[in-house]
Image 1 (cartoon, rainbow, N blue to C red):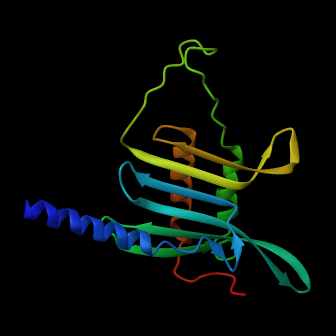
Image 2 (cartoon, rainbow, N blue to C red):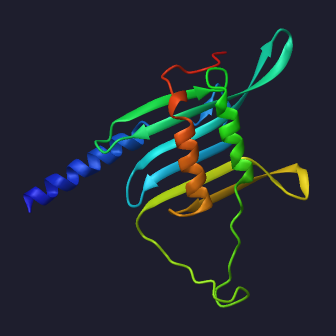
Image 3 (cartoon, helix red, strand yellow):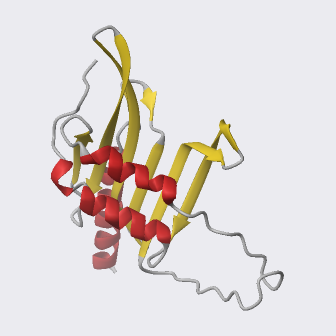
Length: 180
């Protein structure tokens, strides 16, 4: 009995520590326009990535730059914060822009409409979550909206997240970019 209490207490302390160091999701007071979270089912996030549009004054003109922050938690509960930016990693913008090609899922009303649309509910695997505050409806590109998607493996969102992760491997560093 005492062993179980000690184990549960240790788990509670570790999860509290991980949650307590969650970073401020803004960059110099600017909110992110995209957040990607990848986590094992029933576990803490493996990583969360924020994307920011930063406006800088360069030679008297306003220039947009993209910066990414990735917050990773390992199995021991230790966290690291890494940064990437388009100045040091020119392929970053091209890799990130592929999110615009991500197909939207279609809503299915069970037993109505799509015949044979059987869904498999998975309670394990990897959960991919994407939120954007810079989304537009195809027929009205001037009206901003928010959108959130969540899926498991073997989906367009999972494929995009894994491709992004692979493309950005050489881009990550410890220096926070675009200091004000």
